[in-house]
Image (cartoon, rainbow, N blue to C red; front, side, top):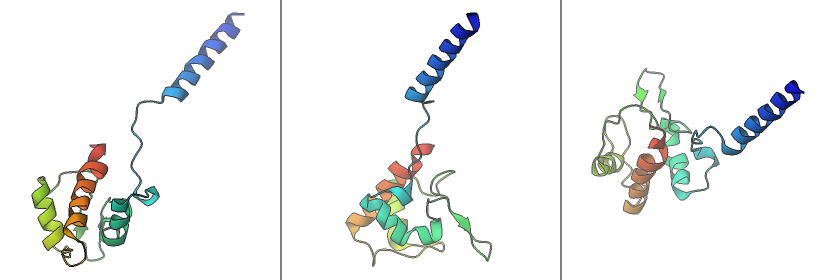
Length: 118
């Protein structure tokens, strides 16, 4: 009888955990997103920064920055906008490929979507 009671309590606790989860935030997946910004990222950024923005090391040893973790070189939106637009430090300038609106969308995408896992 006592074992049956513990079994019922255990089932209740496990059910509650399954319903409410552990509180961990689900990771934003660029590959699964239908958002326009994610599409822009896949088309323009993923080739260097990786399909999920985690960066990579090139054959020549150059490190492409991880956009999800670590310290950003640029913190202010205007700095990030300028870097995307004008390029530099190995990055291609996108001012000829993306509109001002699209570059602003990418700044918000990096700041709000990819960096939410801080």
